[in-house]
Image 1: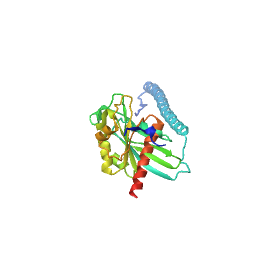
Image 2: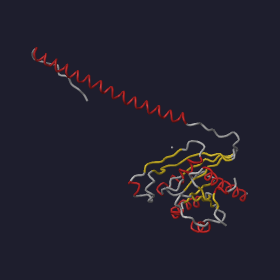
Image 3: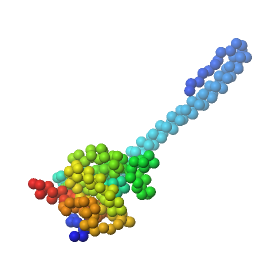
Image 4: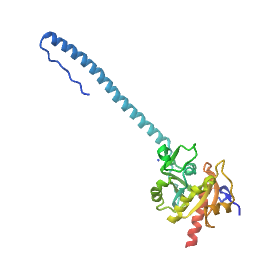
Length: 263
């Protein structure tokens, strides 16, 4: 049996003034000094006030920009024809394409918690390609409606092992999971698949086809990933909408079949 591409499957300072003097001359001098100081203080005060105005202006601009961003985002409500909903995890190692896939298929503006990767994190995380400069530190979130009847709420998990506690929290209430793998480093996917098995979350596997991915037969992939015969295995491109949607359809079909058999 050959490995099928997914497209082939069924359709976040004080100043002090000295004015005292012992004679008029001193008094005059003091007065002059006071005037000069007052003038300087007045100028500085004006500068200080300008600084406050600048800060306020910056805040106003920022607030306006935020408001513009919100107003530019269309509000897409769940269709009235929808009769069911499911929480779906999108899991896999760091850099496998989870954020990309959710952003590709989501019908709403996806929530992403991408943060710039730092040297401190490099001491803890698995090395990745130099081109990857950000990583998910909490979750990704998106939504997609299938066939006008079923809504999938997609939760992308962090790929780093140090975020496993958050990973497990995200898994609560999940109906199933799509596990993304990269054939250039299959071993990196073992932990994610193992966590799903430990949590007893049904899943399907999607091989994300990178331009320089190594091609393997389905049998070789199943053997390397130690997959059960009934676990769906498809190929997808997380950058392409149709391909990614079909990978999710493969998972949903598997979940329906599993539920039917159990009943």
